[in-house]
Length: 117
Image 1 (cartoon, one colour):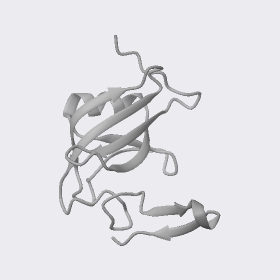
Image 2: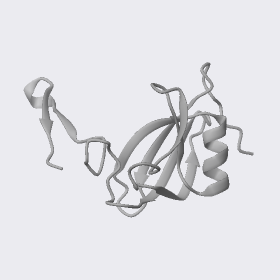
Image 3: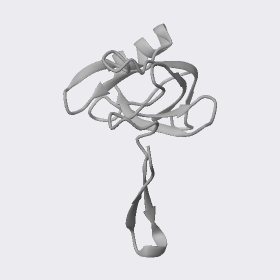
């Protein structure tokens, strides 16, 4: 039985990946309504902690995320979405495919390396 465990703020972490490549696109949070709407519509909805509001990915950018698969971890306190991204295919507000465009160079003691868009 699916029984998601929300944290003390009523949120659950959501890792979003590209359905075709498996690349991690973003990490966001969902509240109960965002999770319910994602399941109901098949489109990714999230909770913005900074704006304190519900949002459907792509409403302003056109980068609508259509969910092809949803998973939960063993504790049911994290969600994994596999999505197909609409619009230009980017998921990051910086204009990149993934929000994870910064690599930490561990050999250089933590120097940041920026991947090209």
